[in-house]
Amino acid sequence: MSYQKPKSLREGSVELNEHGGLSQTIEKHLQKYFKAHGGELPPPNLYKRVINEIERPLLSISLNATNGNQLKAANLLGLNRNTLRKKLTEHKIKFNKK
Image 1 (cartoon, rainbow, N blue to C red):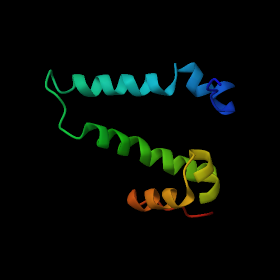
Image 2: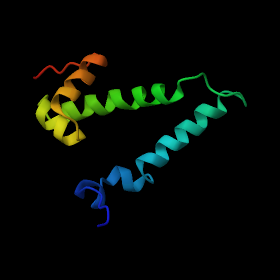
Image 3: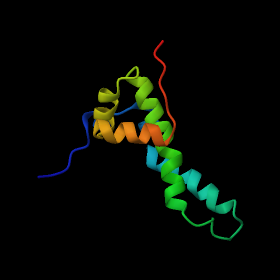
Image 4: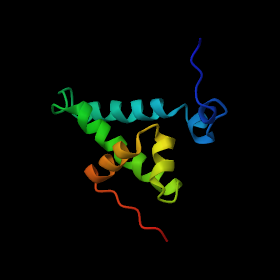
């Protein structure tokens, strides 16, 4: 059984396909980050900092895309709703319905 990307990635978000993919965009930013340290290594705990920097906007945008519906946002992200709620609290993300 072979892995298949979710339909939204297979058929493609225009932004992801036109710009060479999200991972390539992130890679370019990380290369700039390393270069900015002038040959020295960045401070420790880089993995945790990068994940936090990516996770916050991902959660926020997903919550906005689902008009604040946490169950739909959790499904979109592939998370349990309680896990999403915990992460929203950790990142101090609130959604105010209009």
